[in-house]
Length: 429
Image (tube, rainbow, N blue to C red; front, side, top):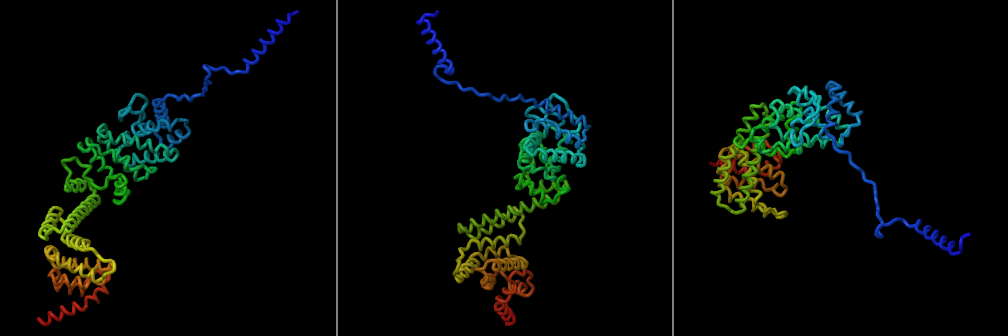
C-alpha cells in the first residue's frame, strides 16, 4: 500500500504534466510563424529550343503541321517566347546578347534559310500570324527578337538582310497582330548601322516590298507611327544627307511615289519656314527693303515657285492685322493701310499678269471664307490698283473670265461699279 504522502506527490506530478501538455512550445516567449514557399523551376531555354527544333524536323518544315504540333504540345511559351522566335528566324537558340547561334539543335526551315523572295517568306509570316492568334501574349517576344536582329544587321550577310527586310515588310503588310512600327523600326537608326549604309539598304528593300501590295499613303502611315516620316535623310550616311541624294537614290530604286512625297514634304517645310520668318519680321516692324531681301533669299535657297511666294506674302500681311470682331469700318481701314504700307513688297514679286491674277484669286478666297472680310473685296482690289500692284488688264480679265467660283457671283456684282469706272476711263483716254 502507498503512503498518503506518496499519493499526494503522484497527484501533483500528474497535474503538472497535464498543464504542460496544453502549452505550445515557444522560444524566448516569441511565437514563430512558418509558411510554405514556391520553388521556381530553373530556366532551361536550351531544352525548349531543342524541342521546337525537333518539331520542325519531324514535320520536314511543313509550317501548318509545325503549328498544329506546337499547339498540342505542353511547351512553356510564356517563359521562352524570345527563344521560340529565335528558332523561327535563325533556326536555333542564339547566344545571349547577340544573333549568333548557340550550341544545340538547329533546323533548316528558318526565315534566314529561305530564298530571298516574297513567295518563299510569306508562309513564315502567315505561320507567325497563326501562332500569335493562339498566343497573343507572344507579340512582345516577337518585338524583342525583331528589334535585336535589326540592331545587329552588320552580323548578317547581305542576302540575309534582304530576307529580314522582306519579312518585316510582309509583317506590316499583313498587319501582323498589331506589330508596332515604332518598336521595330526605330532601333534601325543606330549611328554605326546608318554610317555603313546598312540601314539605307534595308529600308529601301523594305519600301520596295511593302509598296507591292500597299499605297504610298499606307507606307507614310507606317512611317508616321514609327516616328520616321519627317526626314528620310536620317536613313542616309552623314556624307549623303542632301535632298538631291534622297531623290537620286529612291528614283534609281524605282520609288518615285516616295520621291514625290519627300519633295512635297521638304517644300512644305520651307514654305512654313519662310512664313514664320516673315511673320516675325512684320511683328518687329523690320524695314521693307530687308523683308524683300529675306524673301529673295528664301526663294533662291528653296527654289520656291513665284505663285507660292505671292500666296504666302498675302497670308502673312493679312495675318499681321489686328482684326475687329464687330467694327467693319475699322477692318476696312486696317486692310487698306496694310496694302498701302506693303505695296512695294507685293509689287516686287507680282511681276506678271499671271501672278497678279493669282493675287486676286487669293484675295477672293480669303474674303469668301472670312465673313468679316466679305464686303471688303472691292475696296481691297481698288487699293491694290491704286498702289500699282494690280494692273487694269488683270482686273478686267478676272471680272470677265475668272475661273475661281468661290463667291464669284457676289464679288463680280460688288466690283461692277469699279470695273465700269475703269472702262469709262479707258474710253476717255
